[in-house]
Length: 316
Ligand code: ADP
Ligand code: MG
Image (tube, rainbow, N blue to C red; front, side):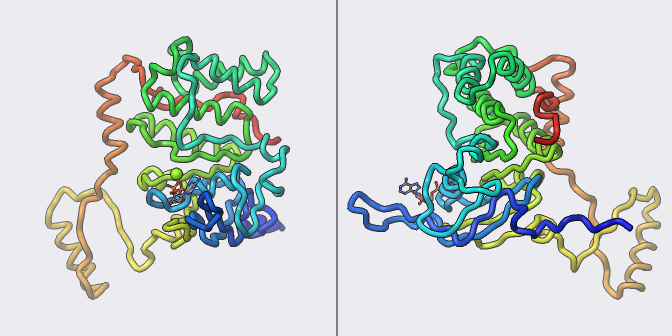
């Protein structure tokens, strides 16, 4: 007899557990001014991709900064990897991509990542190997000696991502990871997020780009004015159980469809909707570009670069 899988709702298992979290910013005279986060509660299950969605100013970055221990909650409780966000052991297990990457423009990618590797106290050999693997992964090996000040927004974003993964974190927090990226860069980042989650990492991301979220997140919380308006798995939020779609190859003979519709009406009592499914724009766009590129490599992100090998190792 096999035992049932452990319940995901066990709160002690959550990678992040927020309860009635409030953050009020005060003005110069310490008067409460902006209630950026108003009593939110959520659980981020381990090994899942969780999306905090919401328009600008809804409190996403403020929530992230509390999780990172950069801001103190005004009230409420927050548990990150089973401890307080201020716990230094916990901080070491987190990777963070800020909304704006602050890169020193005169440093090269190699120097930038080496700088962060030293902050993490990575042994020199290990650092060198990880940086090499990460630059391959984000498709910037060819530009490793160019100052990052010359980089496009997308390239800078990818450096930020590499930096967030240097310490091989268990919990990866990405604030607007796809902002400023072209569709290929976006596609690469989404694949990377899925690959990380497949290796058991937990990912919390924020975005206002819903198409990006839809493909990678298991669960989302929709924030507005510091409040969670809706939350749950994408399946539970989006699946229209009251409707059923049937898909089959288009019959060669038009009569076949007519007969099918007649039969369906007879059985169901209503005429079902008949449409051809439409593919999403992103895969179509990527396919068009891929064909045009042929065998030529571009300066952009490698289409499906594999995960850096040091991130592949499970456990820990
Ligand atoms: P989002 O990331 O969803 O765009 P933020 O968390 O950055 O939203 O901001 C939420 C609200 O809090 C906004 O109204 C913003 O102006 C305000 N806010 C954020 N940081 C500060 C701060 N340091 N001082 C005062 N108000 C702030
Ligand atoms: Mg933000």
